[in-house]
Every structure is written in structure tokens, then in C-alpha cells.
Length: 99
Image (cartoon, rainbow, N blue to C red; front, side):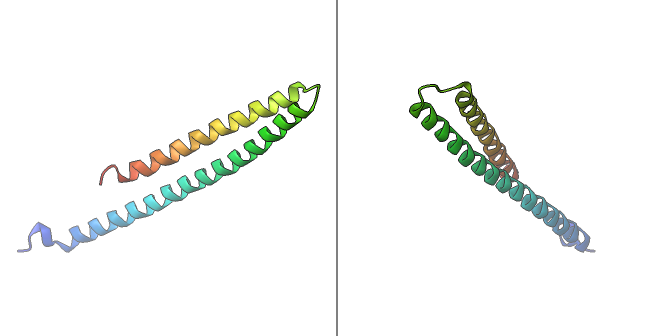
């Protein structure tokens, strides 16, 4: 009589579970990497907008509200990027939490 440890059906079930978990992990990691890349792009654009607004305000005698709005928008983009990076890190952590 075969023991439960050597049951081929049990081994196949475990292999299937590992395969599903691996596929899920790959999807989560890909999504996290994509969010990180998007955050990098938003940070670069925000930095450029902020720099242009700061330069314009520095060089102009009559800096308008537009410059302040551009800088505020850049700051909000950076905040969104930080949130995306935190979510991506959390997703990665949750993949290893059970291990």
C-alpha cells in the first residue's frame, strides 16, 4: 500500500500549485517593475518641469501663477511615484511572506 508521501497524485497537485504560484509571482513582479518604470518616467518629467519653472521664475521679473502650478504639479507627480514604488515593494514583499 502506497503511503501518502509517495502518492503520485499528491506530487502532481504540489507541482501544479508550484507552477501556478510561480506564474502568479512572475505576473506580480512584472507589474511591480512596470510601476517602477512608470514612476521613474514621471519623476524625470516632474524634475524637468520643476527645473524649467524654477529657471523661469528666477530669470523673470513677473513670475506668474503658471510657474507655481507647474511646480505644484511636479510635486504631485513625485508623490504619485512614491506611492507606486511603495505598492510595488509591498507586492514583492508579499510574494516572499509565506516562504
